[in-house]
Length: 291
Image 1 (spheres, one colour):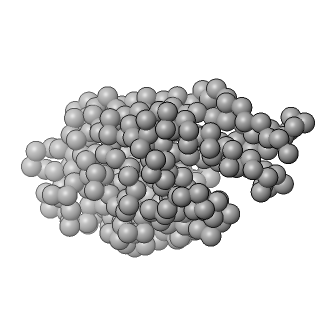
Image 2 (tube, one colour):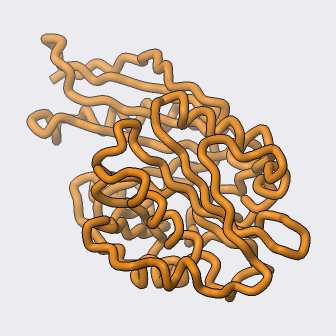
Image 3 (cartoon, helix red, strand yellow):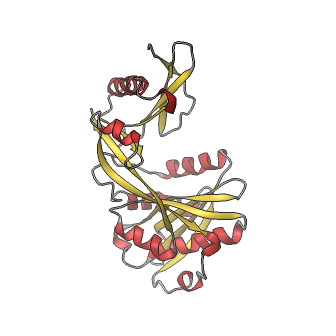
């Protein structure tokens, strides 16, 4: 059977990435599968690409997946990428497909959900004493007076456990944090940030971000949560996240849950999530191919 691979034009270009796309079709023209390759553009990640391949279940084991993968990997090489990553469920056909073609597992993530209806009283955590620190919060773009130190606090994510993933180092500045917030608002969702501020100099030393669907229903998604290394050990992550949960429940009565994902090796953050009542839902593995 002759399967045709056609490059497509993908409009999903952002300041931090662009995508290449391919469609696999059968001789009669029916689609059999697709592939997307996200090329990261920001400094520190120009070596990396992320792969997403899908083949219709009825058309599997006929070569479409291999042809799509070949097209994507050749494009990654032409773009000068050093490695390609992809996600799959542990034990799935996708994991077996990628492993058989040289991808190796480099990271395992646990996904968890907090059912808001089951959350107890958070006042004891939120009002707990944290000498030398106070909480602030904002919606959307960071206020000007906090922008510089908030951008600097993003280095709290630099040592986030990524195990063997060659993810690079993401550089953040004021323009980038503003662009990210504006992009979330542009698509119709709400970004809420809770941050810990050091009383000594008024600088942001930790943060947690939550993105709520535009209709305020269903599940919201946690984005980054981090505390600068020199300010860890004071319970700031649990404090900030508890306040974010309290605000979400109060402001969005139709919201049902909060979603998060954490590397299995990130034991401190997993402990925070467990203490707050997040329940594991499933796992995903990241696989990597070095080109």
